[in-house]
Image (tube, rainbow, N blue to C red; front, side):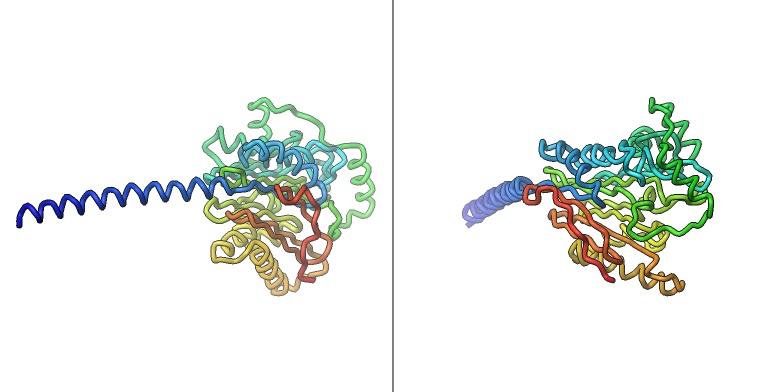
Length: 330
């Protein structure tokens, strides 16, 4: 009887061990198979997203990281003097100074940000340097410029003749009335999922044209203009930054996806919250434009805006870098 019981216990232990090993192998196999099925995707705001996506895809199509992809992507409009709302050539504030804002976030929750940065063409790369080389997450104004120069960035004049001429014309009346869907207040926001299943995002802008000196919108604020949660998804925003900040817009979008909403549904809900906020303050909706784009962990994407006119670009194995008009509430 004892021998039989001992044999039974040995057999049970052996069976449990085999089951555990088999279960572990099965789990690893599922993880590996799901990893193989991950398809990279990148999406970005506005028409300049087409060129930005192309640069990002150079990394994603070769199994590069989403972080490298989004930095490389947004640097394209940053360095283009013909793009008047980002980087070099961006429209100045009412004092004639071009000030830039940017932030970046990776799949581990590392973040870097700069605000009111002058004389540096690529604030997104300065933001990444803040993330990787300092104990801080945000550096602003003169401190941001000092840090950039210490890292080898070149000081340059960002005010192009075209932007200077517009500023001088604006001074004749000095009316601060940003126009909806005119890219004098817009942003290049980019989010990406790489082949390893990791998400990252970047956001960079020269802010609203002819703003008060020192004004900062949502673009460099993690949780407002950009948010990434590698377990859930990523989102970025464009439009009137003050409205996005009021609801912590991109964090809201990601949290709504965490609750089970699709990227499109989450973006729509965030826009609806902004409408409630604006109505509570008697802010005319026809003077506002807000747009959100989002990707979830599955690689599904979506976008939504307050009123017609916002578009975004998507690049994936199935979508060959297309410019898409976002669905709108109004």
